[in-house]
Amino acid sequence: MQTESSEDKERLSSIIQSSQDAIISKEFDGTITSWNTAAERIFGYTAAEAIGQNISFLIPDELLPEEKDIIAKVKGGGVIEHYETIRKTKNGERISISLTVSGIKDGKGNIVGVSKIARDITFEKQAEEKQAILAAIVNSSDDAIISKTLDGIITSWNYAAQKMFGYTNAEAIGRHISLIIPPERIQEETVIINNIRSGNRIDHFDTVRVSKSGQKINISLTVSPVKNNSGKIIGASKIARDVTQRIEADRKQQLYTEKLQELNKYKDEFMAMASHELKTPVTVIKANLQIVQQLLQGNRNLDFINKTLKQIDKLSDFITNLLDISKIQVGKLQLNPSRFDLNILLKEITDNIQQTTSTHTIILAEAGKQLFAYADKDRLDQVIINLLTNAIKYSPNAKDIFVDACKNNGQIIVSIKDNGIGIPQEDIGNIFYRFYRVGGLAATFAGSGIGLYISAEIIKQHGGKIWAESKIGEGSVFYFSIPASE
Ligand code: ADP
Image 1 (cartoon, rainbow, N blue to C red):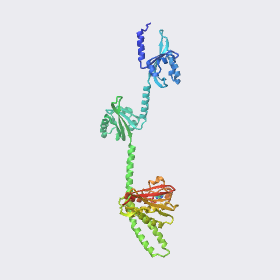
Image 2: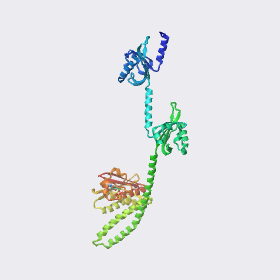
Image 3: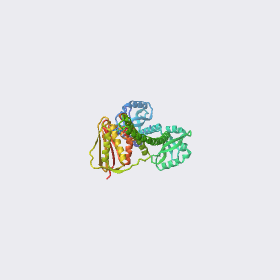
Image 4: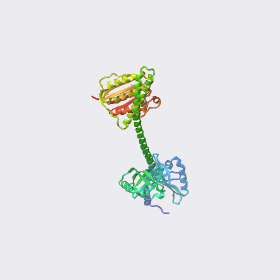
């Protein structure tokens, strides 16, 4: 038998020490007999710590039976190659290793021990897992995800791409991307590739592609450069989302909007025409009734005429409001401004309204200094009457209405406060819209949702603001402000 020279042994030992893989030998009972530098690095134990110990300290508890099987196989002359398993390091970390295990023979060829080569494959395993996760994401995506070379050759094609464009993997991979580009859009590809070559990404580009059956598909395309490990751009990845439904929904929405605008126009035209046509006969009826009223003074039937006149007044107010709306619609609500003291106007209006109500008391705050405004007196009259009549109407169980006016920062601010039913918070932002009426209790009061809209338009035209503060069940305060005049 040939014996190894000490030179051979040294060479062998230096090969073992310089190996990147852990090389360990042990006896059948598991006692470690040698431990190279790579074993120190991979498992964290020095040779002094490991040699003489039982190999079981490297093996997770649940894998201890596996070690017995390995030893039995090697004892029987077998070899285990590239067996992937888990081991523990000194700091308790679990690492993935690939094991090759074989028997150590003595001079007579008897197997007397076991040698193990362990390669740390944790990194490869993690990379493999990441790859598998990415592949699962790509395949489960509803968007078509396609990669291609800089020459436009398709290199990957996910499940959604198969569904969207109708080509299988085998039919698409290796083909040029023009497979799905309609001929009239082929120049898009040059633009896309030029962008990709310069490292640019294309985001949500709306375009059209074509399926295997020739059907045009509206897609939103995002294309990004694919780089290799050294950062060189080697291709492009495309994400295509089918936006056919969104485009169809947008088209329908546009159609409905146009239709609605058209109908709205008809409605406005009809309202303008109807209110205009009603105005004259109502004015004539009112004038004639007033004559009859005069003639019937002292007659017991006068009451019928008075009641009819009251209803005619309501009708006439309503028609005036409709006419105002029509004027606002066509931008013809014109102001005739003059300079006057708003305190005096407030006094006149509150006195007049007080005459019409026996249930409420209107309390006008002590007028301080004069509050001059340059405004349309009749239109402001209209706003204040509207706010006051609302305050009375919507506070059936309260008595007092407070009216105040003051000057602040060049603005005159008027407030009208009631202790009535109040307005829910979610409605406050809407009450100045045309025809908006609050539901629930408020809806039991007669009204048309026009007054605040017209008031808001009048105040807006004066360069002012109108707003409300309210608490349900406690009451409301309506404010408006207009520029003060010196
Ligand atoms: P109308 O009173 O004819 O319905 P308005 O445009 O004057 O129309 O008012 C719009 C809505 O605002 C009313 O329907 C009512 O619900 C609410 N509102 C207006 N003023 C008050 C108030 N002082 N208190 C409570 N709710 C009010």
